[in-house]
Structures are given as C-alpha cells and as structure tokens.
Length: 401
Image (tube, rainbow, N blue to C red; front, side, top):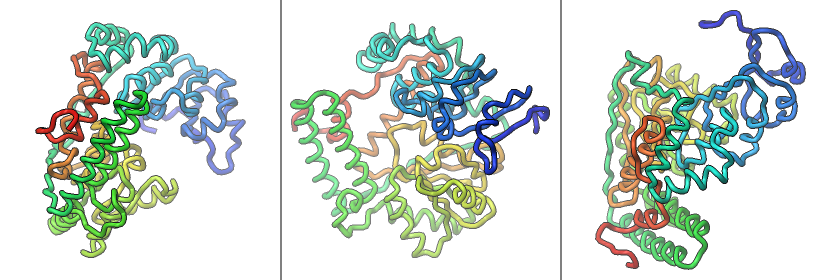
C-alpha cells in the first residue's frame, strides 16, 4: 500500500481460498505471501512452476539444510532470489551455506565440499586463509545494514547485566551438579565418538543452565525457590511501580511458569506466550498488550524471537543468557524497533558463580563469527568439546580435576 499500490497481494491458504488457483495465478504484479510451513505442505505444486521473484523473509528459518522446510525452498524455481535475515549466522557456518544455497545454488559447492574447504578449517583450526577466501566469495552477494545505520531516529538502547548472588543452599546444589557434569563430560570425551561426546557435554551444560535459573528446573523434587525468581519479582515490582512495561524472555518454558508466581503474588497483570499458543490467540495477546492490558509480557524464545511488534514496552528482561547472542538481540528488538518513542533498557539476569557468567564471554566469539564474514573482520573459532568442558570448570580448576 505504501511503496507499490499497484501490486495485487494474496495470503496463501486464507479461509475460502483456492490454493491451486493461487499458485497458478499468472497475473502481472501479483504477489503471494506464504508461510514456510504451508510452503512445505504444498512443496510439489510450488516447485512445479517458475516464479519471477522469490523473497525469503526471516531466512534463518532455513538454516538447517537437511530440514524438509529448507528442501522445499531449495526446490523453488525463481529468476531472482533475495534472502532477508537479522541473524544469517547463529551458530555454525553450515547455516550460511544453507541460506546461500537458496539464493545462489552452487556458489559454495556441495555441503560436504563446503565443510571440507571452509567450515572445518575455520571452526576447528582458525584458518585465516579459509576465512579470507570465504569472505571474498560471498561479499558480492551480501548487503549488510545495522539498525543504527537505517534508523537514525530510533531512541537509544541501554544493556545492563544484573548479577544475582545465589543463596548458600542453591549454590551448594549447583556446585554438586557442576562437579557431576564435569566428571561425566571428561569421561565422555575420552571414551565416546566426538559427535556423541559433544552431545553429552551440551546436555550437561543445559542442565547446569537450568539449575542456574532455578534449582527446581534441574531437581524437580526440591522445593527451593531460586534467587533469580526472587530477584525477578523485585525487579518487576519496581518497574511497574515506576510506570514501565516490560517484555520478559526465557529459553525455558517451565522457567517462565516459575516467573509467573511472584507476579501473581504481587497482583501484577501480564500476558503470556510460548510455542504452544495458537497463531490466532498469539495475535490477540499481542494486541491486548499493545492496548494496555498487562504490565509485563512473558515470552518464550522460540515463540517471540521474531515477528512481534511490542513497542509499548520500554524494558526487556532476558531471564537467562542464551548461547546465541543474536537470538537475544532479536528478542530485545521486539521493543527496540520502528514506532518506539522511549529509550529501551535491556536487563540480563545472570546467576553469580555459574556458567551464565562464562556464556556472556562466549557471546563475544559468536558475534565475531558473524562479523568476520559480514563485515570483513577476523574471528575466533566456535568452541571445541574441550572449550565447552572449560565452561563447567571453575577458573582455579585444571583439566582432569
């Protein structure tokens, strides 16, 4: 309506729509909007015709090249292709290969060849020659714009880390789990295949992350209320008392459930959204919050990482730091976007003396991986199994302890 009023836009799969006719339409200026899920369901019909233009919004949705969703996109015929993403590289270089496969098939070779030539040397060996070669290959096809470059009138965003000291009983519980996880990880690394070892190590780290959020997440039989839940209750009460609205994000749905308790006790109204929320109900809750119904909005990472506009909030609370800082940036971007009139403050709740503190350091390396290829800077490799195990150790501990 704003930039191209002559276009005829249809939403694929709307109630009463003839899907076959929508795909077959050949009217000049026609645009068909389709979700990745519905594209996958009708993949054969979409692939059977040629499209003038293919635009892949939120292209990180196809970062897993082996997924059926990605395969459906790869099967599309289009004369021009454009991928849009705020997080083209979240964890591994293979994600970049997948997006590039959709835009420029063949540019980076097969996945096996890409892993041999680039992903392996860069991620495991810190091969700067491979880094430069890959950067030169993809540079002509990437246009990068940061939010600061294109939104001059956006209010400032402040990021603060709120360190939460654990009480003695909670710290002892976490320490016992940490020692068990460290022993299990070192045993796995020496006895299992590397892939299985990494899986076991990540499982142990995830348990420690959950314990850092609240003891009850790692040991359900405990009735110990974690320090982070208490700190969140105090922060929420302070924000509401000062007339602020906040978005609250966690990767763990059961942790969001625990965070409801102090809000219910204080009589603070809130909205809630996780991956099980139906699409229609999702938008109702978003609209209700934007209309002033609720002081806080509790949202799971997967449900709220993108596609939401919640500019009524001027505070964002990251309840647990995630491996991937890009996901945090996407989450805080729900409030810090076009339409926001007030400065936005982002709080990260970090349990003191836990691996959450080390995750913040890991964030730097993750950001450098993206900057390496998109801005032309050098970077460190992604963590190896030994580096992951180091996250479990106390700084004074040596390997084997």
